[in-house]
Image (cartoon, rainbow, N blue to C red; front, side, top):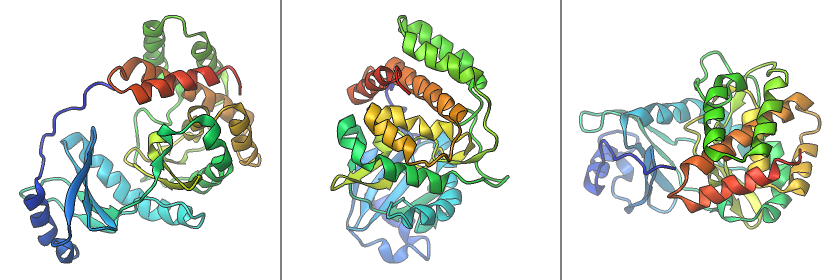
Length: 294
């Protein structure tokens, strides 16, 4: 992707400890060891002791993503926990203060290796487990579920943006074909909860098995095909076949056609916006190569 935007507000260690002390349910945690471990486009992550982390937005636009997690994960996390799959369900919902005007969370620290660094062949053994996870996640969403103007919407709403990316890429026939087929498929019959950002960097693996789904900031109500696009980002043809078979007819053929179209869209995004992030560009190249098969 392009260089991440500068933080509009960044707290140092002392300020985060003050934030923890200022709220009754987190005050007892303020003395635990604390160190920054990650800073992305939207959030900064500080490890708190051995078992916890503090997740804070670093710009105003990201504050709604924290709210989405706080709204959705207490509902969705237990569904996945039954399957042995962890999620960063907020343990403490942090309230805005004068010093930090956005919501923040204390979440469990989750160990694991991102699937982004693994081969498609290595991912295949846990394809059925991911299918089970999405089966638990993709249930009808309530009217007040978070919305998203981009993820899980009707493909036609992203057609202009996709065609602009295809022009930039030049020779992109597999992506073009997958996208065009998706546009002719029937639309989703209902909106369900979807993760909204289910790429390999947000999937953690432990001992060769699916351990956790993380980063639910883009969780929304939408077309499950958007999440199913992960089949082309994660798996080769054999793994993807196992992934689809494990859904046991939960999704109709048109849903899978739309999923392949969304995979083409995501591949195009990674290929056009990841010059400074080689791992994501490589992901786009691999996914584009998988689009020749269903």
